[in-house]
Length: 368
Image 1 (cartoon, rainbow, N blue to C red):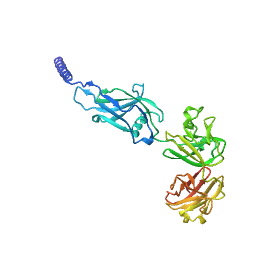
Image 2: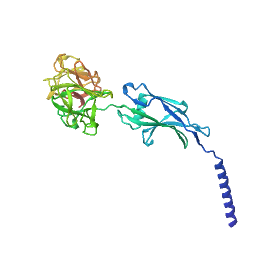
Image 3: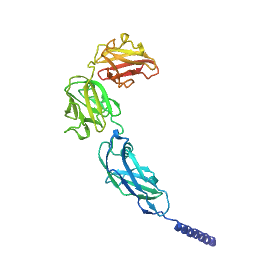
Image 4: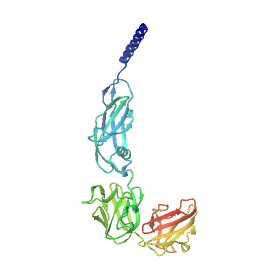
């Protein structure tokens, strides 16, 4: 037994020595020369209107290793001075030796890296080349970039000048199409309002970019002459009480709000009628709705699929004419004659209740 133990021990030591000799024969991958990186721009103010334009071109040399290998490359982006902590990376093709980014593509890289839109930031960029566990970093490029919003904000109207008062839970959402938000609604003169980013007081509020306003709430750079800054982050409406068209342009270069009188000043007519495919577009036989008061009307009706209709304030093709905001469709928002289209019913047919609130500037089609 003692001899058997000695034999096994000798065999184990022999195997270990052979293994060690093989490990010593293995080549160790080493970086002989680090990569280099250059960019043809160091300050970028990116705008959505220029998203298809060239933003920046990066050019690089690949690192040199002591062995012939194929390396994987990525650009790392981080806030300046952080030592690339929490850096975000985007892959690039090592063999290309250059990469050109449009404004749209580079903006996405910056936004994905966690930088806030419309704020100038000092960033650092480097190239990371790797082969297995071997890593090489290029020199660091410093840039100053201002990204833009990829999704424009939504705006909710609230305040004593509005129909809903200061009830954030019922704030009026404006209709948004890309960077433009619009609504035809009622405003009271010499009273204040503001815009929220949600049906709540937090976290987003939008006020005029005016001295004395909370910096976090400053938004509108341009506004119509019937508006002015008011205490407690509000906007004062200095026009005459009535119906108005509110238009917000959220494009970074604009950030404007314009309030102009609606072509139809009437918001509480005695009667409101439905005219459309449901009655062969005959205005003299337009269907009367029930007047609920305060500019609100409703009517229950059978709507075949594909129905189209509008609202009239008289049983004729007169001036009191409301339809879908921004042409034919079903936005749920009203616009006056000259700025509207037919309301298109997209359902499968059946009985529905049509509700209209001229004061709020909205309509609804709900199944019964």
